[in-house]
Image (cartoon, rainbow, N blue to C red; front, side, top):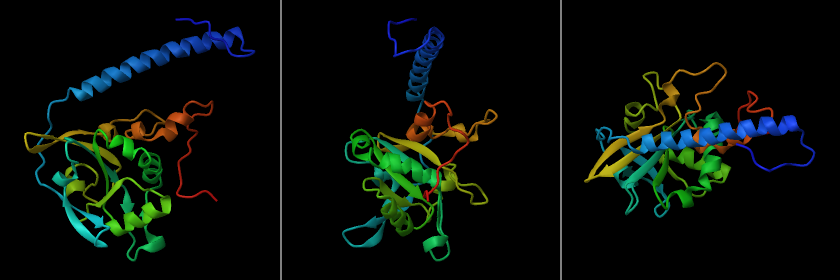
Length: 232
């Protein structure tokens, strides 16, 4: 495929290489949509074994309140996206807390999109840390929209792969659907457990993390760099 598009002072070698790359990008777009269609066609996963109870901050009462997974679906919506945020709380909070820098980078980007996202689906963040700690971290980051939960009183993390037997935490997005009054698992970002090519991260949540897609467009790519909580 060729076009008449030319940029100032580009060489014939550049245009040939760019045309070949564009053809590969077109094929990638087709393949991406084919995979998305395959994902949408998944049969229902297993019904949830428990209507898990999370903790949520109630601004009206200034207290923590329990909320069940079934209550996370907004009225008129039958899809819930629940992000498992890695957050290891310190014994006394404060500087000993360890919110994941990568998870933080993800939600830094996602939070502003939540008002748009929730026109179609329900969305929440769940951390193993107390919700007060997650809420304090959200305040530091300036998050205003994402629903914040703690899963510390339930087996949700273990049941849906966000924690192992040693209580190590993993960043995952899990999708649940409600059908005929029952809630089923639909999809989880299972690339986390898939074999990885040499030099690659699992890229299992890159779809919600635009940082990497932007870096991939530059000549240095990702460069072995990873985000931090602050840059001094």
